[in-house]
Image (cartoon, rainbow, N blue to C red; front, side):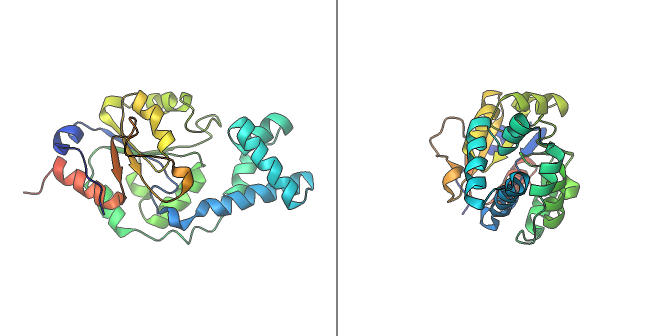
Length: 234
């Protein structure tokens, strides 16, 4: 079901020029669980790099994640690991669990304005996923972890870089995310925020969070609803 949206929507969204979408668990359903594959690849990367058994590699992986924000940042800071090698390895996954989405393709076609992907993943990963979905042609660019200088969301600094790089006026921008905490910096910069709720514990949001303006369950339905109210059919 589509969540209740604030009214009048046509007034709220009429001046939007940029739509910023997270990638994983946002453009495709969280049930696809691609991150499980990535997580296993990170563990295997550490096992191979340090010749560690699985349980020790797992412990190091999570330790670096908590101490440095990402496992990659920990590996870079502590061991000088080349980020390109790491990203290529961990994103070498099977994207077939993501179903092609003709409804999303049609919905995005109706939505006026520039569309950008902002992901903690890499550009090649985003390309493979959006190609699988059949929606790559709708996006004007991908702002990835490399462009963010390996500083992940929700650190606020990359949000400013994104805004400058894509010439975004925050008051005329919408950001869509499955992780509620990643919407806080967008809200602080003046963007309209949309949270796609799901059952995963890491999603961590609530309809009462002050930095969340809209809560939805189905991205395609929501986009069609928004586009229809911005430019209703004659």
